[in-house]
Length: 453
Image 1 (tube, helix red, strand yellow):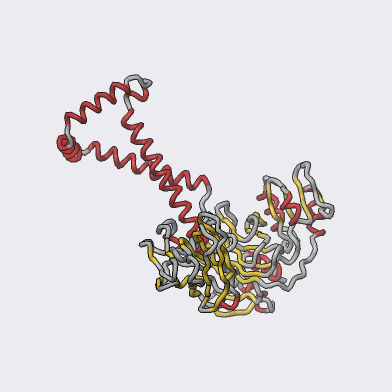
Image 2 (cartoon, helix red, strand yellow):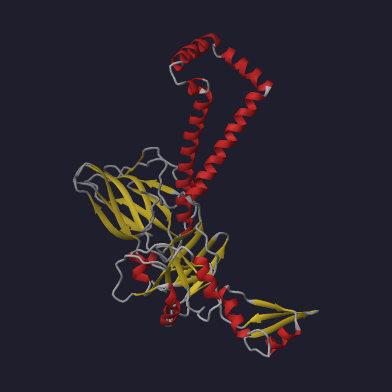
């Protein structure tokens, strides 16, 4: 009899999506050769490589429903769970519990008494009854599909398993963020578990608040050291002195004297180090402004790229545009660049056509998704109208209401046009007796995108 159980070993390998196994001892190889769950591939010297005859993926629905454990000591629970016979039932760990947790887990284990509002069908146990909780876990019967794509610091999941638990066989870390699900749970032994709320899920490695503070502190420290080294350099000091002479040295000295007199009223610890204090303040606020700008831009960029849009990295560029269809079919260009693609897609159109009575341009869309055309146009008279065409197909006549100011219009791109990566938008003057529209903005809106808020 072998000293180990190959079938139990397969379950451990499946847990981490291990596809291959290398054996060296004769006893192990003999046991694997007679087990149909292992397939020999190649033998090199004393080593023999086997493939696992199991259909395993990085993301899959667990065989049994997960059990939520409210604890701060998740490692001990994981150790005990890993050596048990209940590894088909994932343990999910959380230090606290909320209404969302109660709506997702039928079985909850607590390592200390908590006062909670539980669901009617939720079973509550304590650690001494952990075995009973694991036994109570029911088998998950589902025919839903899951496919995953692994990239550098990113996992893309396509699934129709909405609200079903998905076990992600990648090590948990607080920096992992998710889009398309409420949150990421820590699952035994140290993996991730999510409940998808959309068919497209994105798990990516982001930055926590501690990471952002650390990066900002590093930049600030480098700038301070750089300035200190420059002030210690004799050549830099000589250049500095000559520059002072060139910019009206005496006048500058007078202003500095006045400033020093005013600074003399400051507390002693500031009076002697005011230059450093002023520099540090400037560097801090400049770095903070840069950080906030880049962080917001990066956030929008990541969101856009994850949804198939290109060019999100040039967010916050461009000006308000103004194309006037005019009166009596006369079209005017107010000399602004037309921003006619999504704020979630800053790629410029291939061409903007401005002719008598119409404006036409190409816009990027996401295939097989809901795409909503957003237009901002000026109105101040009742007699304003324009015909909207998509790919030369008439969609709608836009009528004015006489209310002064810019007005927003939204139109869903028909599904028959969503099988391509772009559409042609045309806004045409429709009535020679009325004024045309002043078009200032046009872009594609994707539901859920925060880039234009």
